[in-house]
Amino acid sequence: MDMENAIKVEHLSKSYPGFALRDLTFSIPRGCIVGLIGENGAGKTTTLHAILGLVSADEGKIELLGAPYDPRNPALRRRIGVVFEDCGFPPHLTCRSVDRMLRRLYRGLWDADAFAGYCRRFNLPGDKELRNFSRGMKTKLSIAAALAHRPELLILDEPTGGLDPIVREEILDLFSEFIQDERNSILFSTHITTDLEKIADEILFLHEGRLILSGSKDELIYDHAVARCTSAQFADIAPEEYLRRRRLPGGGEELLVDNRQQFALRHPGVVLDRAGIDEIMLFYVKGEEK
Amino acid sequence: MSALLYKDLRNLRRYIVQLLAICLAFGLIFGISNGNFYFVSGYAEMLSLMLVLNSMAYDEQCGWYRCALTMPISRKMLVGGKYLLGLISVVGGMIYALLLSAVGTIFFSTSFLEALCASGASSCVALILMSVLLPALFRYGTEKARLLMVLIFLLPVLLVLLLSRLGLPAPDPSLLIALLIALPFVSVAMYLLSFLLSVRWFQIKLP
Image (tube, rainbow over all chains, first blue to last red; front, side, top):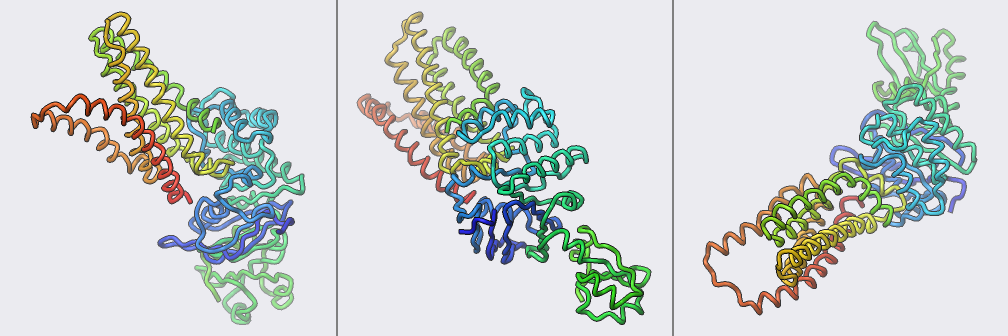
């Protein structure tokens, strides 16, 4: 049993016709916010579903909150809060009836005052049916419902997708508050890399079903850089000095490097720019190998 | 389980009110004006079947099952919730039919025993229909199981029409009584077996 990790995944594999999640191994320490990124179809949602037992993995071992996860045993799910892109609550319910339902479900854990507080904070009306809620309102409700039973782990699939920057900011603030308790952890998938840059401690980058990059966000951003060089400069750069390469239409090359300082010392004439998460993703998805 | 039942009843609240209004209207039109209480009790049971179907369609449409399985709800509990809703709606239909029969007995001197048998039999038939339909809905979803739903509603009607065209002699009353006695046991047994099958099939669909 590993009490330090909120999630521990070992050699997780899952195959579908035309897509496979291959041998994922990673762990998420308690007290961390981890962002799961990757292009559409990279396997983010499949990974989250496999962790939650919503799809059966072909291979692999999953531990949640220090215990092996058995999807047929719902007891552990009392300690987890989950938010999907779609709200999941039936359309004729209201915030009030969601409260009454979840009060029965999370007996002894449900904090009705906290739920009412989140609803007030997010301006969610108590008696309006969910079918009349906007997408942002549904997401806010899902987050309020996921937080009000005081979980230790939040797993969220694209929680800020399609939301305006103000709502996104509110949600990110809530995540920051949640993580103030160092036993709590968050794993969330997203396309919005600015959100990751704001709050994530670590990043998992999936590409075509494989985990190709993982680690501390700050180190990732600090170590990686984009080298912009002419064809002549490129000729002097050894293949082991860069990770990926992009040819520029007007001639010249852009290279993704993961040892910024050493590269700058070796090639002082080459322009080096900071690589954001977007650019790192772009190089892996669109760039060429060495 | 009470959370699941609350969710379904709260979500279907408006629909339930509509069904009650329809039952009341049919009770007035066919029961009190025509004295045909048996038809009304059968119709009430069919409507109770529709209640469960609608609740499953809603759940599927909004992605409730996936959401529920991230909460402390087991697959057995999720399936059991629908079977409990089915049972409650059938019992509700039966109570309505019995009330209507009582009205018929008091004001129109119809036989209460006959009405009791008719409402009991239609409740049992509704349970049997649900026993066939629910596993298919859990396995294939409401969209794919639609054809089966049509067949389930049409086949008994076609069978009765066919038998009446064949001009077969009426069955022996003692056979009918034996069937009537066996029907509750058969329907309850089928409902229980159906529940077990639904749990198994639902686990295949969402492991």
